[in-house]
Image (cartoon, rainbow, N blue to C red; front, side):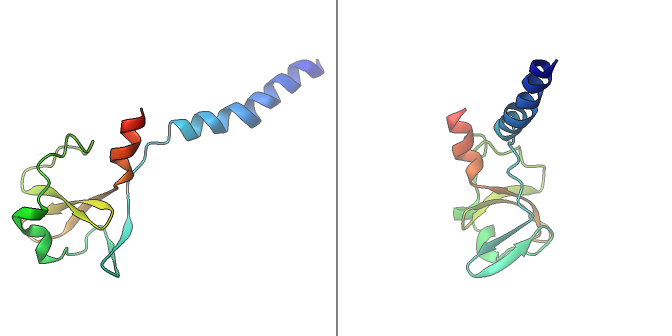
Length: 105
């Protein structure tokens, strides 16, 4: 009986944390820093992010979800941000690790 308990104890102590770590693909950012300023979801993004040069049109290659109508992906110092055109608000933010993490998979 002790082998049985030891076997399952090893499974819970060793295997489960490894499985959980391997399946952790959450790249959501709730707050992030850009140009020495802290931003959160719902904050207004700088006007420069609404210029053509900051509009990410190749969002599929970067493994980002499709932008909804009236929004687009931009980049702010290591963070991909989904911006809304109408009020310049940050709708979503993803760590740039999303690009590199999926390259390893």
